Length: 605
Image (cartoon, rainbow, N blue to C red; front, side):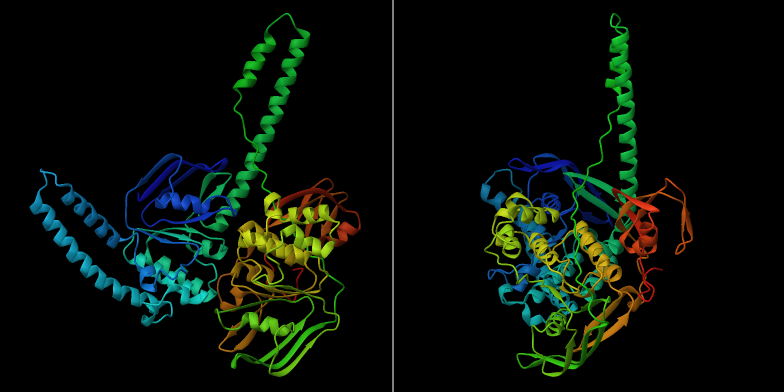
């Protein structure tokens, strides 16, 4: 056992972040730590690292060889690349810590000190430190080169590096730390990484055999590296064996079981209370009802499963444009005198959902800005359908005025006298109270994304152009956005590094590489020849069968009174039954596992 946390609690003023957090990490463990934004994941991690103190609970740490990758890369002018690559939790720090202890011991002047033993140990530690520093220099340079950076960056200040370079330096730090650590903590390691780098990191962690705990919203990353999944919800942890996909299914079964147990408990308790009340009424002169009440009090109380608040996203589509939406022939796009993309040929039809991916800096955002006329092109032809109504989502949120509150931003669009409507729209994105009332520059990245999506909801579009729409979003929010885009009738062009998103939303993918683009039909996984997720979990509407019918798409027969869950991707095969009154919506909603459609030519298959 490397580390064990039992019943940890933590509060910041009146806000209780952790109520009962447990975790045990053994050698070789690979653990995915998940939860919605604000659930307390980063706080829990800092307590495990010793950077924060818990209020109550027990923390046992059996190793000091611990590495840590924070969520945000260092950017201060105080630190060079060499400083950041230093192993603050590894064996070098242990040597320095012991040398400080010996310094304090010698400075204390105690008479019972074995000076020969102390000086001998100190000299040995100095020698180890000198050798380790030389070894570290070599390891650090090799780590930089592993992620595509050169050795002459070692003494550059972090604030002089680009965002992509800073991220790669932090990845180099993971490589360095894994060499001398028993345990790695990684907080959102895949944020802002391109797909190739994420897949490299997956393979590196699997090959290193170092125990690791990863906070991530990247579902494919969690699927590949996690053997245990720990969820933080409502201040408590719950552990599930297996990766993220296994967690989803097991949690659904847990919630279903808890719901049934709670309903049974409520029904039995109500029945017993009614019997006790009747006994008291009929036999008021006896104490039989008191005995019955004691039995009720001894019943094992069952808690109702927590009802999680979910984001509601519905993107309204304008009347469709013609068959051809965008046609590009031999486009050449330059910036600052440098050719970014050349010989770009595209023929985008209505209803297509195209995912654009590639390494950072290859020109993905440049491409979509040129396609919608925000950037000029040097050569070639570009035609956009006259009926195209474009909705654009920028990863930098240029359409947001950060000096305004979220409410003020919405009121600019819908009218200043519609404050209640603005609040309702923001509430659908789980934005309430101070999140709505304070200037948006003080909101988190995920909260800004939700405001930007709210603005998108207010537009009538038939062509959505999205640049990294899931950045900063937690898994439930990503799920809500994906579901909305699956329901959207218009055309979608989206830049993303999220492989799960590419596989579940897009029916075509476009790779941007070495100044050119290459279009492929099908999902990202099918294009790369990788095993694809064949089933996902979606929110489904509940319907009641009013008269018997057969779904000829699936061949399934339905009987009167039966309840049916219909996910958005299945709606087309049930439309006729709904229109004929054979199915009636009950208003209920549950999550359901559905097959991913990888055949864009037959969307109802």
